[in-house]
Length: 309
Image (cartoon, rainbow, N blue to C red; front, top):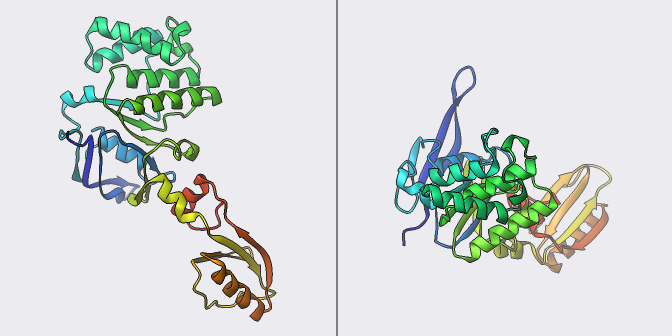
């Protein structure tokens, strides 16, 4: 089977400002996603996540490089029936009822009218909106709209789901229900590619993590690998009475913030080295703490360096 997603040296540039200065939003990205993978696409605001997703879907055209979805270009209409998309800022027709809206989306996605009518009812039930099926979409709350957003993406049973902040606007119950729904879809063998800022959704669900920043892929690995890189490390915080002396250390990392020097040691030998350096320079040991780090902090460390959690 052809890979659901293949990006080859994908680049997108925009002209911005009064002088139309060129800004590179996505820079030479290359990766592929295999059938059945669940891939979290992470990064800070402005990193290039939504631009990449729009390029995947053909909503933007690349400056250079290429996108292939099941060996087709995203502009080909025939590929659309294979994709379910949850945008971060969806548009709904407020005058339609929830059922009418889903039926319309089903037809647009390639279902026959009768089949779309049937699946609309089924998916309104699955996302917890069956009681509101005949209510106009303009009367829906934000959380109800996001549940409807899930339904329109899934009702035509696409093998590939591309989701941009899929749980945005959901309350805790809605968040739980929709993540459970996605897990069920993943268990059927569907391929999921989604961006999120909720790192708690990633560690136990995804098989792979991509981290993007300033338009470039920084990390492409598994959640387990990210977490294991942080385990066993030891944080040492020290302070000096005057200017921090220039260290001559073999430790993993160091950060000086607000007069507190935070060192990351890989083992006890490096801790002893830090302590000796501190004592030799009349410093004070504030804290020595072995890391028992969450997955969230491990990801943040990957993106931004130490001393963020």
